Length: 339
Image 1 (tube, rainbow, N blue to C red):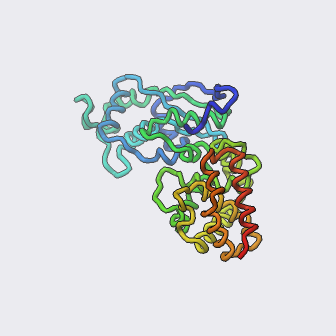
Image 2 (image 1 turned 90 degrees about the horizontal axis):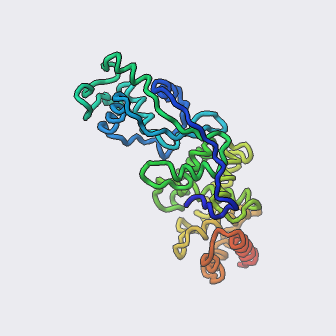
Image 3 (image 1 turned 60 degrees about the horizontal axis):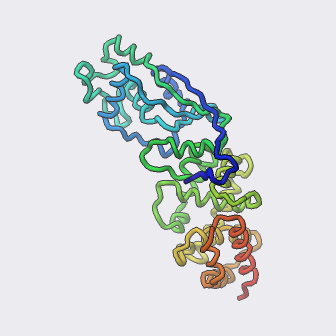
């Protein structure tokens, strides 16, 4: 679970919402004017022609359709689409009479009177009915609790695959920081160090985790999910920590580790997370003091053969006490390393 209600004093989440009814032509106009923010993990259109046609048919027959779930973005005042992007895109494509691949959108697999028709070839009365058809929307107010909207995404999104925490962050806290994390994850050296393909934003979360621990460790209380949420929210438009500072820190850290230790630096004993956190934070801290590869190699050998270090992986690796003791321990181990 991405957000643990058990960790709060009260299980109730402060999420204000209200209902609103929009005519179809208004929704299409707002799609055209890019008034909806569609998260990255939702951007792919997956409906087949028959599914899309049945949705249009439902509206033309005067039947109710499922509600759209939207959230009013705190910053842009646009609507984040939590659930319903397939329906919104279907409306847009039908009004424009074509799919993104250029294929003409003709109704298929519907009642005989509608079969084969496009938006412009609908009888004028039917076209008017479609324009004026009402779709109910449940809208989360911009006063939402960031934890609540995070949890709501996890529960309401019907993409068919449970969302990863970073996919939700990229939606809720979209902005320059989110885009930068996606760019950093494409770096060739990082790809070698990470060592696997990842299309679910896990690697972006690792990068975010490193940056949060480096820049904001004093605010870590023991809940990693909430810690990363708050750090990403605070710097969503790179107002606090500028892009160049983040890039320099990240690139200098991974370049040193790759050149000094090699591409498998995080994969000793198959304990990626504990090595990643420890080595990235330590390296970033020591960069400005003049890191020596020869000393670091000696330290690395000592570290991976240090039984006490690996005991930190046997209990909760995200508890504040464990994390702080681990970072303090490897810092002392490095400082006490002699050639």
